[in-house]
Image (cartoon, rainbow, N blue to C red; front, top):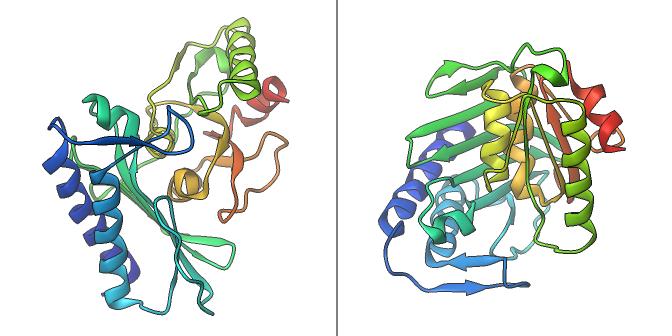
Length: 257
């Protein structure tokens, strides 16, 4: 099995776990803050994903949301969010997904994101394009903020990051953007940029498992992903993320700086 086949198979198995527990009476726990939730669907799906990948690539590294994994000498790292959008999932809101990326050192070479409720499977391979259920996808062609729908996310912090995000929203609306959405699953947000459902996305602080697969999807679909300074983002480190169809990227950065 190649990397893509293994990742797709693992994502599909995780999706079955999501549907098994979705809108059922499960225990919901908190992590570092009352807003940061974890459920049995998170932990079980991560076990399924890591186990499926280790079966074929036992020497590879893993960077995942719910557990720490012992480092190896491999130059390959799987970056995994077993359930992105846990707050939505726990509330019965069907906007969540599994996100699986593979990096060779600091370069992303594979990204797979699966939304089980819609049966939408997004994937991208380095230099091979981005796809949704087997069909190629591209970013929008909008050239101005006035023609664009943007997406944002709110970090769990209810202090400085929240205030700055609210300031950004106000500033974007003064530019007369077409609209703004807050969906609650950053990996899906990036899929929607890649597939042309929106033109731009930003969020103050995302972990690698939140954005790694989506970053490659956006770039392979013709878009651009940087931090708020316009700099390249390392998929192994947390980062401020700005993603767009490339044509409105500079305009977004001018608002966010």
